[in-house]
Amino acid sequence: MKRHLRYNEERSQPRFNAFIHVHLKVQPEETSILKEKGNYDSSARTKISNQNRGFVNWRLLSSWMATSVRRAITNGLKVVHNRPFLAGTVFLFTALFLVLSRYPCFYLCDPFEHHDKPNPPPPRTFEERVHHVQNVVQKQRQFLPLSADYIYQQESSNTDLNHNDWYDIFNCPMQPSPSYPLEFPIMNVLNHWPIADTDAKETRYIHQGLCVLDFAKHGADIVRQQMQNYQHAEKPFVVKNHPEALKSVERWNTDGYMDYMLQRKVYRGEFSRNLSMMYWSISRNHNVPKGFVPPTKLRPTTFESWRQRAELMENETNSTIDKMYLRLDACESPNKRCDALHRMWSLSGIYGLTHIDDADFIHDELPFLSPRYYDKGISKDFLIEPQKSRGIQCRFGAKGLVAEDHFDNERNFIAVLGGERRYLLSHPNNCKDSYLYPMAHPLERHTQVDWFAPNLTQFPNFKNAHINEVVLQAGDVLYLPTYWFHHIVSLSKNYQCNVRSGHSLHYDQDIYDCGFLYPWPGE
Image 1 (cartoon, rainbow, N blue to C red):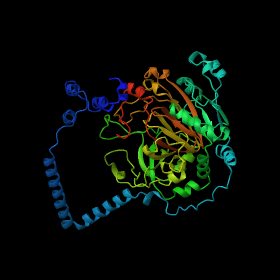
Image 2 (cartoon, rainbow, N blue to C red):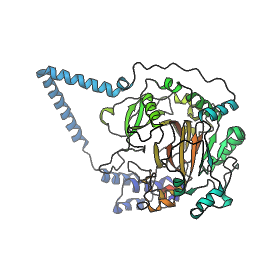
Image 3 (spheres, helix red, strand yellow):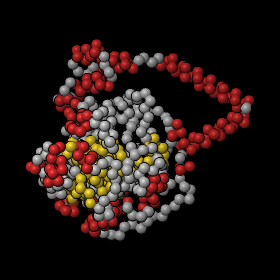
Image 4 (cartoon, rainbow, N blue to C red):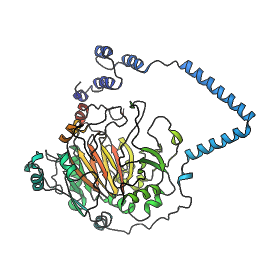
């Protein structure tokens, strides 16, 4: 089936047939039911679903459950009557288990921890704030694009670029050119700057093809028009020195501010024995391979615990301690809570009932990313469809941590509020050369290739992929269109937050041809 069926006025009908084929594994003889109807038919879907899912005798099941409950209560009363000490001990330990699992701050938080609110940053003009962030927070480090002459001299045997493709990323045209953004052979980029190299340098030259739209250099009116033009063309770009973003950067990098805001609170921690922080998910719709082990473990943790680990990794990324992301989620609505610890549909051990604190305060800390501030005009630069936003998600990282190459099926604005992160980006048409885990796999949408040392024997077409890179520093915001690939490397202790707002179909065909089919936004 061709993906262009999705663009028909009656697109929901032919597309639903495709969705049934992918997700319900319809047998060949059963497809005739759909072909005869020619469109969605509820009775056909019910028949196919029942054949795939099997029949459940709910009356028998409820009777069995009632009998089991009665038996358990009867046996429990016998134990209480015959062995009261044993029953009391079991009750005490059960109560303790439930309290500690529900409220982990009892054993994670330091009861003597206390941080006073630091003095606010001194009043600064926009120009003074830009200077402060560049010189104090970013420490005057620069990441500059490699020149065309260098590319042709060093990589002439392995590049298909020509001089007419080049443009100045710091002075981009109002409209993106047909060749935008420049992409480079992936092995050239990885050989020039290996993934494992996270050493800080005053100046580093990189394979950057993304335009930098600078409020301080070009002015608000020009930059906002460029942002709209590049976003409508669904092209990635970087925004620098946005006035509201600089205010947040200034606060978050004030000594003691984050300690004060996050003291005695528990959030989700993603722990790994190595530097890989690959996302995973297990639900009823996933086909979990036998022996699958999630790449990270999810446990409650505190900001203080993350900070200590991150500071240790600044000097020793190969430390034997568990590596960690700290995750803070601020829901899109005040009536919704984002305090779930696990991504699994089933409970999981002591943490199955764990309560973690919400991070609703993030909306007030980062109003330029918040849908709640859209009507006030503060977040209009970064929210395309605010009604489809899923809130603000923050991940605090440490030097050396890696989120493997993957795509997301929504638009994304990503802001770095402290530290530095390296993003390696590629067009969705690189999908087949990226060797992704398939749909319904717990690691779906993510690459199988180890970018630290790519195995070109096992993945021979990987060398055909093309990418470019950019380093986001404090105050930088990256626009990432739907389905664009990104591989993330933390270059230092860092704060990163992102907001998603809607879904574009611009690159839908590329992903469909690669074997991925997702519901329409809102389904």
